[in-house]
Image (cartoon, rainbow, N blue to C red):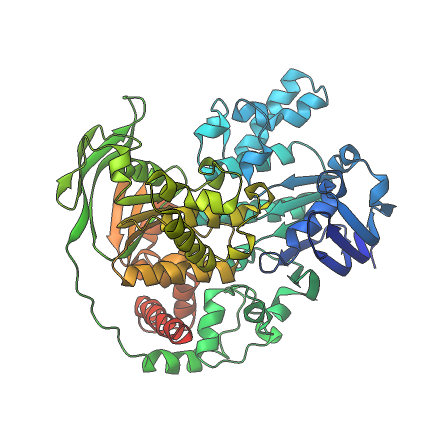
Length: 571
């Protein structure tokens, strides 16, 4: 057996500021060249393991540890954080926390500058690496000027310029569109194969990670390793559902059809799944699903009429956008990073003004209506929580909007507590926001808008960085509000979310509206998927491989059945 590059021996860790340990008796051995996925619900200890490996524990996050952590056979406590940085590179989930340069090019070159790399050589390396991650056209931009997905690629490029042995990826797909997420996993896989680097990935989007081969999946819960197996074994056990981790959609459909999944079926990838064992039971189940009832369409609450926009007056970011949003519906705006989705929301909220066209709300033209007045009707939750937070404590942040509206203090407390319960933040209500994870900060910003009870809420990537339990809690809560008449517009890269919770997908590509249809149709049409950088749903691929007569109808039937199942669970 190969010598381990990382080895935890009966290792436990207790943060100084917390009541209980975060890691308990971890025994973990990772050998050179392995590609490992660490999965588990929020708070399970995934990120803490990463921090132990890269040296943020104990050099930044203070606490007490017992047991041993060895890196290349040497005790980790004997390695300074600079020494570890020459061995281990980390791509953080929160890209803004990793930027140091004033431009994208400077940020990528930061490690090279520290090593006094000659400028011509530095420029060549930056050009080469930026092309690998497809960020070469933005080298002169400030990091604050690019989209969330583009920021993620800059962080990856900054790690790739240093020839480290171990690469740690903390939720690398959180802000990426589906096609870019697939590209990222292919890039990581290529790095693994061509360089032999050891790669550790922490990620909630299991199906997207498994697009490329993974050696082992380590499942964590409550600070302990509860499983450490190859993906085929993990997907055959039901452990993912047991510990609140979302399984691939095609696995869910097989479970609904009553199919017993075994490792011999190679279920870790839709292209390796043995179809002989699933074709007939899948067909029988599909044929028994009753059709969904047609829904009546309510009146329009928001109308975009031929809206165009440019930041500089020369290059249009949005071109003649036209669509209506109906009262009480939950719709998704999807498309590639930088397509103009977030800009569209800024126009609706009044942060920017259209160059041409009109935005109509409840029959009233919003041209000339102030941001403050629009905020009484429209709530906007931004993609990056750090750009919304202004208070120290959670309860202060969530109640800020009500306080500015002179709401009675007793009512503020009641409404804040109710929303914090729903968003899973009530136990932390008196915590400083600085002590929260990225995903927890995201929930704080959602809570701060929900507490205002707007007619329309726009959410930019509401579930990014959320584990399946919190994802489900937030989406079921939003669905409850929608059923009571709240209109919800989601900007998302999460194709699962779009399929499971929305009836309509508005697809933007290069600033143009290219499709406005049901999620099932959108994710089954390559003519829409390719220009928008989406990803064909694995349900459609499964139906094709099973030779079902109407793969599109199979996708829609699954969606209808899944909604009925979830509704039963929550009754």
